[in-house]
Amino acid sequence: MSADLQDEQTLLFRDIVIICIHYQLFPSSLSHVRWSDIRRRGMYRKAPKPPIDEVVSWRQSLKKLQESKTGQLAFREFLRTEYSEENILFWLACEEYKTITTSNEIAIAAKRIYAEFVHVDAPRQINIDCGTRQEITNSMSQPTLSCFDKAQRLIYKLMKKDCYPRFLKSEIYQGLLEPSEAR
Image 1 (spheres, one colour):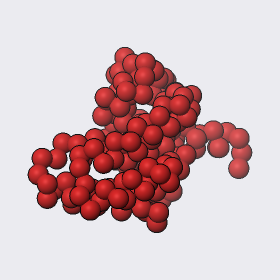
Image 2 (cartoon, rainbow, N blue to C red):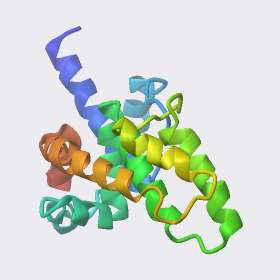
Image 3 (tube, rainbow, N blue to C red):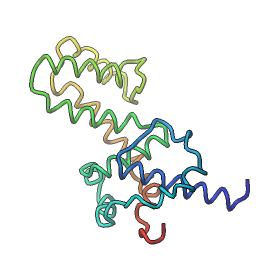
Image 4 (tube, helix red, strand yellow):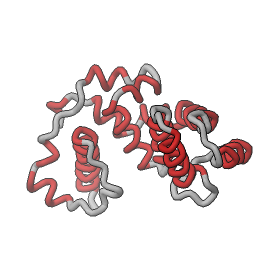
């Protein structure tokens, strides 16, 4: 593959990611996308990017990034490319979990979060220490709204110190910073 064609495909992929972020479309894989269809339809040129001042504000902190729905989506897509999407998904699930008001819903949601992220054989197992994992396991018989707090703090720290700085240097973030005319 020539260097020019590879550069063009890289730019097209970046533009597809921007479209997905804007329209909140996140297929599990973009591998089914045919470059010729994208180019022929010109769809990668139609999606407006988020306002530049919003994108720039994400540099302030991970908290600021997560306050923005578009920021969450961009960060999630970045984490997906690094095979660590489970971190943001767990964090978001915990945030939603804290808003539950009935004990029946708490029990159902706690079991879902546990099965998806915490259990040793979870499909999206988060990277937490065995002591925290055991504490959560023990709390599943009578889950409370705070049963995932320690794990959520650990995952937030991991994202803040490790993933977030790499996100700010990523092609996804840098592509959102570029002026729209350059696209």
